[in-house]
Length: 401
Ligand code: PMP
Ligand code: G9A
Image (cartoon, rainbow, N blue to C red; front, side, top):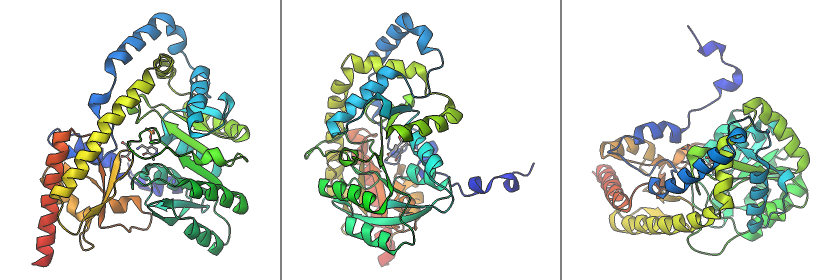
């Protein structure tokens, strides 16, 4: 059976995610993985989840095992609206839909906003899963650079001015960005909303990491500065609770939310009712806040262990970011090293990372890599960075020889 010629044009343009492909490889037990952005497995609150699940089965099994509304479990929607207030977002349950991971939100937003060849502005580098969702609807990308204070607004405005039409969408991960670990400062968040108004585009704000701050002061969401309803916001329980549960939420203007719900109807009818109830009960008991405080401590330490190990084991000529939160560091090796090629050597040493070019739409960033510090144990972080340092050193020696 020949399949290739039968695929839609849309499907032909789809690309495998390097992160997902690497996940299969890094599940081998002897590999130390800094690749996928996976929460620490020891952090999962298994005993509490077991207790809450039993409670749901004893008290609300009929609803939990039934289809639910496409919008999601109302109490959880209310909770998400409440949860988002701490970032300055004014939302009610009617602005919220519970999604099967924020990846689903990114897919549905792309589905309902993008026609082929619409231009989407993305950060350079940007989150692979977001790029994948946008690419699947045949939009074209324009990348704008970031510095230590996030997406550069002067460059964004210059880029827009040079375009024939303003972009349809700007996609940003403004807080502890995946992959670069950078946070957009408040002044730029306001400016981005002003530009969206002036040039009439929509902002997609993707914020899975905002609650994972280990140092520095909290920032308001971009959505907090939006009084026109042109910012779509998504966050997720994947990194603060469990990615396996596939629970996230999206916030938007009510008109947009209605369209979103219609699109979601043909995607999965509704998000898993069972886990929505479990999560809500977990939140209702105020367990989520304690849990986040606990993982913040764990991840702060892991981040510091990785930073110290980089200092100790990475050779001269390398540099890296020092993020205040999230799960990732972004490292740079000498220009002449292609980290995509080097991954083969790293795997031989049983250590993995994601090569940086995967996060750029124009293939740049060939001497960069993303290192996730949340998954491996402290000992494995030290050992993994030591091995990676050795691999880089070998490349440097080979180049000099
Ligand atoms: N957006 C960003 C920026 C992410 O880093 C991730 C997960 N790595 C997601 C979206 C998707 O998360 P989920 O679907 O698990 O909610
Ligand atoms: O496993 C995934 O695809 C989610 C993690 C994303 C990431 O590593 O950025």
